[in-house]
Length: 313
Image 1 (cartoon, one colour):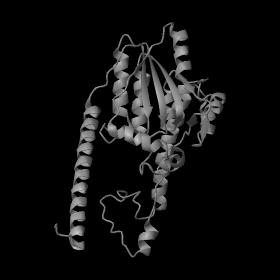
Image 2: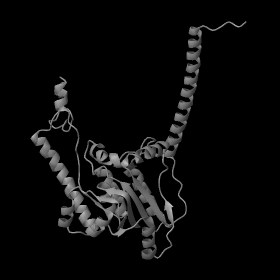
Image 3: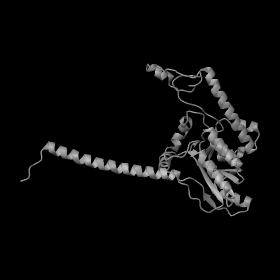
Image 4: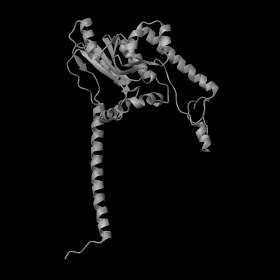
């Protein structure tokens, strides 16, 4: 007759089995994680395949940065985009470049790098604003020869921000002291651990005003609009595509299809689009899937808090 297990033996056996299952699940998770990491890293350094076609379609999606590509990056970095524009410019079969924009803006330097690359190419460049082409992304769009936007696209937002949080009162209430050690009296300007002084506030504002003037000047020149008119619109507020067309901020209401039709008529070609982009990594695709559900809720907060530095968002 088999010996009956005691209650303690059953508990030990249960824990042992659960531990084995847990370790198996952990090993499977780690295996999948490192497999995805390898695939993502490989994709981030592998060149994208470019098929036949005569209109290079280059996406500008997400926050515009100067950062280099990585397996974990889901932003539009200027280095990649400039390289794609330059590559398309060197291809004889490419007759035009179509920028598909869906971005709230980003860093001033990254924005200027992309806009300069657009203005340097000898190809016709069309910007198509999809959901959003605001602030720095709109600045980039103005460098194109023509701008198309959906009637509900979010455009404009001609402004600059360097907003951030400040916790000086909080740390005082918690009896925490900010020990300030700097060489150069402005070295820690913008730290969240102390309030800005009046002079520091003015320095920040002067810097923002200078960038804002450059933004206004570029839009005025690129869009052939009087500077005073652009200044009136440059409040940082956004305009839907239909209103932006009336204000002269975009040229036509439409998307890729309408842009390709325009190119066919203006260049006397049969437009054949070819996707010019670096392969998306696993993490970029994962970020895209998770972020889309929270886009409407988080967009305003993201524009305010995504960068503690100066940003065209």
